[in-house]
Image (cartoon, rainbow, N blue to C red; front, side):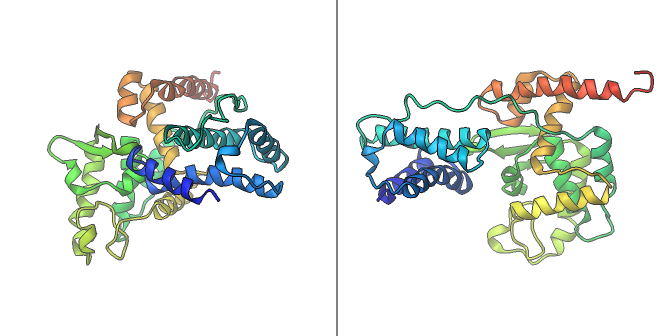
Amino acid sequence: MWQDDIEFYQEYLRLQRGLSVNSINAYTSDIHKLIEYLESQQIELPLSHVKLKHLRGMIEWLTENGISSRTQARVISGIKQFFKCMLLDERIDEDPTSLLESPKLGRKLPAVLSLEQIESILGNIDLSQRDGYRNRAIIGTLYSCGLRVSELTDLLISNISFENSYIRVFGKGRKERLVPINERVLGDIKEYVYGWRAEQNIDPKASDFLFLNKDGKPLSRVSVFNIIKKSVLDAGIDMVVSPHTLRHSFATHLIAGGANVRAVQEMLGHASIMTTEIYTHLDQKYLSESIKKHPRS
């Protein structure tokens, strides 16, 4: 019943917002949550007949099914975006989400690694293995540049300035930014590019992609997660670490080192400084925990 509207919305997200396939799928899944609720209540109605009462019923249904407040807030945000788009295209006469409230959330502080843990992870990667320098370059780039995993897998060799030590990154909405990269990581990238990568049979379509799998194709997000997971285990660290953990650690260590919040915002590619300011709070917690470990504390 809503298929045409959903397809229009997906095209809007792709063409007008410049979102990736993963982001579009996430937004679409929020709409399917509403449809799933309506079907569970045996409610059949066109898009234009959805009212605030239906949306509030969906929230109660999500709560009854054990969906967390944080996930509910994300679903509501996605549904609001959808109805706003439908209103702009005059597919509906009024927005039923205008009075819909999201659950109140406390600010969640992300987990971070210590400098010692970062060094341990990098130091325990076996460089005698063919993929050793590649894996160390991956983790080093994620941490030293604060990249999102999609930004890493999309990174091109032509976007690296080896002479000036910076990389060109395309973030959300294909927004471009320049991020400094340290010489140590550049050294690992060179070892990988002129070593194992140079010996591979590379898919012509992947010739400019930096990080490749054993088949000479761009590395997937899942592969990056698995590389990090193995490296963390090899370092003996009992902690769930994702690419975003390395990004959080990058930002936290910069703030702890006295970096300007605006500069960190630019390097992370945050649209709003409000998003970056979470790291000032995280820095206070990080320093507090560090002080507790002091032998004279």
